[in-house]
Amino acid sequence: MLVDSHCHLDRLDLTQYNGSLTQALNDAHTHAVDYILCVCIDLAHFSDVLKIAEQYTHVFASAGVHPTEIIPQEPTLDELIKLGKHPRVIAFGETGLDYYRDDSNKLIQQERFRKHIQAGKATGKPVIVHTRQAQDDTINILKAEAADTIGGVLHCFTETWEMAQKAIDLNFYISFSGIVTFQNAKELKEIAKRVPLDRMLIETDAPYLAPVPFRGKPNQPAYVRYVAEYIAALRGISLQELADQTTQNFFNLFKQARVNRYGN
Image 1 (cartoon, rainbow, N blue to C red):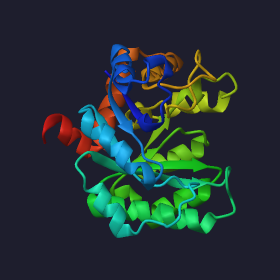
Image 2: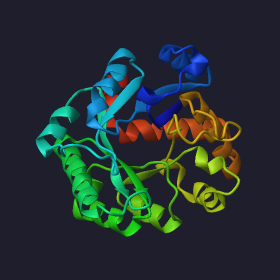
Image 3: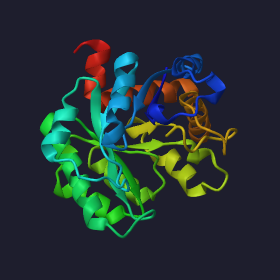
Image 4: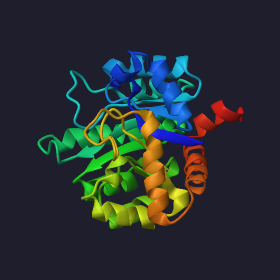
């Protein structure tokens, strides 16, 4: 069993599935991908994300605003908390800081990030963190807001080993996407070898960042299997071991998903 811990089902290219999300999810199942987290990046489309999670019992949802999204009005903390109380919502985000794509509004990004963490603490749900070229500020905000009390994940990780260590020390997981399969991702491959297996997640970030051998094509949840196979080979372990541990990690982190799965 595998989990795609981060993708955007509401944005998938469904051309190869005749426009059917059900077919895409069935394809994922044939690749042993049995659980999926559909991640929200703007509240204008939150209802679309939630509708998918309500329709498919093996799909979960998050609530949040991506750090670089331009929106007419920032959500209040109370608004985020209200969205996060829905039983199909298991996390807040994706949130975080992205100074690579936009370093002109750092204060807005930082305040938005803090608000998501505060909503997570109010509801007991973890945060999904997007971070690019903002290592110090990301870690400092996680510390200042006591994000370790709820934990979370640095998704689609592409930063340094030092940052990964600091995040792990703050009760965060490190998630790897198809980028780890890219030939030029040499440093990332080394990090994928070093991250403790019990602090690792895997993802597609579909429809973006398809792994080799599909690089440059629309990504799909089914392709998380290729990420898993690649990392297992890097670490010299079986696919089964990596699948078992990353699946357990997912349910350890996202406790609401565990409730939905096991009933306790």
